[in-house]
Length: 285
Image 1 (cartoon, one colour):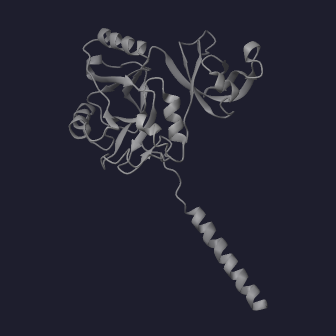
Image 2 (image 1 turned 30 degrees about the horizontal axis):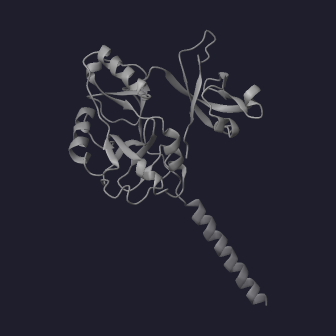
Image 3 (image 1 turned 90 degrees about the vertical axis):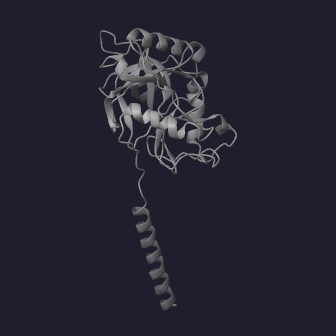
């Protein structure tokens, strides 16, 4: 019995050591190296940019084998969705239509793909992250090589404008149709990881992010529901965010500690966002 007990202890210890080693060696999630807009207004004449619609989708990086979110989590996609995708890396957004961010966000968060709902999604490609070419030539290459590969892969249209007046006219037309705004990409810019002044986010309003620090109770028709989110910006400003929340979000509000995106129209004299309106919960998975 003593011999059997000793053997059991040795085996149990070995199993625990193997489990601990396996856990410690499991790879951590690595965020993809993405390029982000750093400017909110053109720094150069608009003729030096290519402009496209800003899509309200979920950022995606196709690695050639997998689709990753900006946080590095793999998106569970139907096999047929990427069957004809290339083996090269592509930068883009998973998108359904204007105003459908919540729908595509819900699909991306699922651990198993909803086969039918994914048929409404397109991977809207706007860049070749591993190319050493300037942006204008990268766009031409996208059109030449990838425009007709798959019904689920589309190249985002880029256009050139000779004046700010023409660009403003297009921006107004897109916003009236439900678009968020436009993106301007410097024609001669190379792909660079992180924030770059060569990429401009052009909107009729500004947006920013804040952390939810409290749930404030509703009154009147919102009695028993969320009245507003109390949020805190990176620089410590605290304010209420009530406009823009749906009844469903008031019943099931964003968790305390989560990051939300809001839009606003300039700042008040005290430095708080003017007419702040809730847009969405930032996807972090």
